[in-house]
Image (cartoon, rainbow, N blue to C red):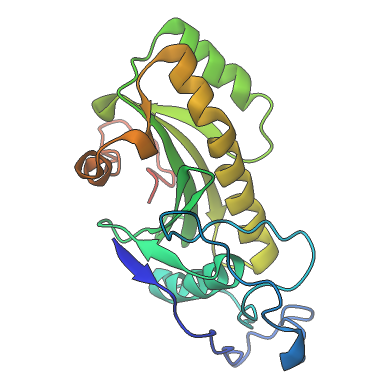
Amino acid sequence: MTRVDGPEPTPEEPHAGEDREGDATPPEDDDDRGAAGPRRDEGGQADLALRASGPAPTRPPRRTGVFLDPDDLRVHVGDLLRSILGGYEVDAFGNFTFTHEGARAFVTVGPSPVGPQVGVFSVTNLDVDLTPPLAAFLLETNHTLGFGAFSYDAPNRAVWLRYTLHGSSLDLPELQSAVAAVATTAAALDDTIRDRFGGRTFQESPEDVQRGVGPPDTVQPGRPPNASGYL
């Protein structure tokens, strides 16, 4: 994985004809930035700092208008994640990734039939069989979740927690809420799933196994038109 601890993002200028009232982030004094630095876990990974209040490590990027190009949105998402986390890694599939309390979370950007979208997900468990008790647990848990839903990846015998955001007007609070919800839920339940249903958590798996867990096959006959896969 590639580690990214870039400099403070440069605020982007509004595109002509794309200004929207209330879209831009208010300017901040330089002395108010960076009071709460990024936290690190023991492995040196960027750890999620859930900052319901107080300054972020870097100033959030300023942006107005609508995102139509996934590449443009990806730059924006990277800047937002630096503001939320202080840094991140990039995995073999090009996803942004970080750890939170032993659980690994991913953020990725891609196109969809309804415009660019952002996927926030965590592969919580590997080497676990889909049994009726596990299926019941995942479905009953989904019923209580405000953000995201659990799913089962049969080829990798893996449990996923995933949430998708429409990216055309993505802002900092929207992404931060999704990242916090997925990361904290994964960290709270991956050990429970392992202890009750077997297998191992994603973080307990060898690095080569972790790298081999890729996106699902989204090209299937009869699939209805929709945003598909985890991007």
